[in-house]
Length: 408
Image: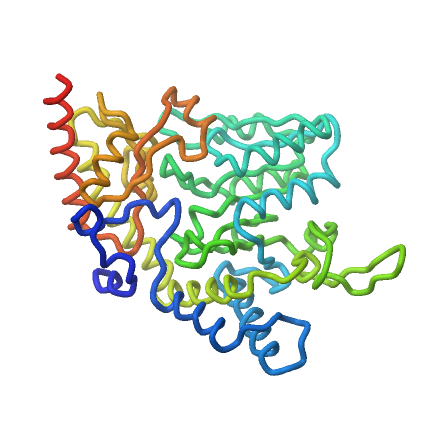
């Protein structure tokens, strides 16, 4: 996929005098020219509000906006287009679920089950809900290799369990969780299954029907799309019973002095002027990934991981977190280098034009579980190459040599 790199204009630049290598794709991905063009085209030619106008511009904008919903439906294999809701991103999607479904269905003594590897966005909303209603928040343990302990999950599920919410792919450990198996466990106890798909939707084929999830949330900006747009998939039968998350224009059917009625799905949940350009841009990103093919995307990234992980592990003094076998590791590789703080290593890499993330990655409970403060994280995508990995490994060696010499 070397030629793909030319589709991303931002990659053709130098950082600190060095050709940039972008390895922070778990935080946000770069955008192909086709996505950028879709945003410009909307604002230059079709800028109008959706659903409300009967004039040409509004009809064109509405068609493009709703076509994006259809593209996402096909991308994740949802049964109905009404099951696809536009949000600002994964964080908002999960907060909506806590404040709507959670507020209406979780009571004192009920249990919510998550895991130690969750992003803060899949922890704090459930903490707040549990505190408000007196529910119990429980955590699934991890095995020594960072994978989910399914035996512990099964033991902790009971008829008190009402919500199971687990990340599909970890943003730190490189673990891909068996969501379908967890969904089966959850449904056997009458609980709903929520999957955080922020780190999976950009990198692998998603079939929400096959996984049997009740809700699936992901963000556009991690899958080549614009920032500020995301998706909440909800099973129609569950979603249709929920109250709106917000109230105002667009989602209203009829307003009287003392009461109001609301639009049917999906518009009931999309109050106010939506992020029209963002939805159109997300649709363009879906087109780009679909044209490549998600199985091809996953296979290429797996080839990069199989190449990079053994090389990183061979660096003296390196500790890699998560599965040590590349076959069971996603394109996220978190590690530490002895005697070099994660932030210092990331700063040194930036001086060489290599952009990585360092810190707790919005997973402080996981960091405490691992007994560390931070890691350096390399996260790969379709425009990365083996040559970039080789250069990265070479620079790590030089940085290690420098720190050993200077601070010996």
